[in-house]
Image (cartoon, rainbow, N blue to C red; front, side, top):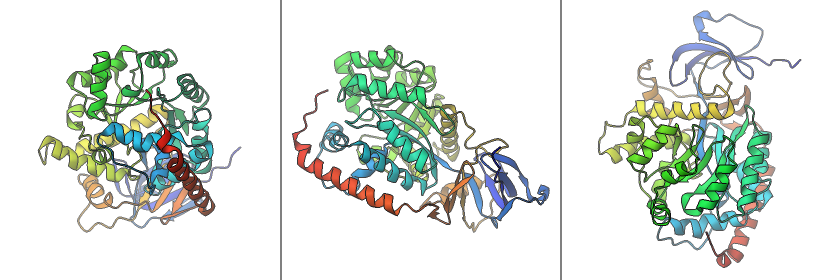
Length: 443
């Protein structure tokens, strides 16, 4: 029988975006064993860690990311796009065209470490590469085996790739991976790179899984769908029976009210990535309207910014700009998105992430925030949002009770892995520079 290595935090501020304990304790191994006020704490023989008034919150979840994009950082490449499609053609489609399995593994590894340093311990990744078969296993090996992180993985099926192989990669991975640490979605790139025949093939092989697809990230996606099929993007997905409560529709920057109603009808989730949308100049998603319609909006980072707290900040401020009001989008709306993100991860992994209750997974982080105004249960999230989130880095991080960051430092030494990652990135850059100009995109 496995020995339980129980730890107990004492004298901690404990907050899970719902309940707040000003001075409490929390005992845990892989899961939370007990939790409460310090006045109810009884001395035990287990390891006791005095947090001395530091704050414990659930670790973050990235609701949509592209870990392979980590190898684009610093890459010098001819880049002068005039629209969103040219951004794909001049950068991302060149990059993913030359990834091999080793590059996939190491880009996932260092990309995930970057997010881990900012307190993210569960990642919903959307992968693309010319190498299809076995690509998701490379990401799983990096995230789950080497870093002890949780993940939900998908491969971007697209007419750019061999459709049958992409479908098999998704189907096989979903079938063979379901635990508290790993799960799969059926990946698809976007409407503009998927024919009716391809969507039909995906639909035939879905078998109750959720799709993970970019939707109307730019207006070009909607224009392409209307021109070719006389349907808006979400209407196309509905036509081919691709929508259900597990379906993850990413961006939704340019969907209309009818499409929102369809999303609500099927209980799909919408993953917004506002910082990336700003970077690509594609627009600001009307998050407030979706929330008002009862759509479950979650937050990702699109592989651009590795900090989920930064994404939450940008959602808040950009939604003020979108609604032309400093008050129409509130901190309660951010709380809703945060809780929706935990809820979706729990749906996919069959976990209890994001809540401090007995039996929930011990995935949390410690921050040494020093408040200079009073904290109460009524204003605790305001302190977190305006005081902790800006410039956030995690002091201590635990996943399933195992510490992975201590005092801002990774527990394990990854120097050799970083060295190899640099070598693989340089190899990729050299190939892109030499061969990238010869690629023709037909879709």
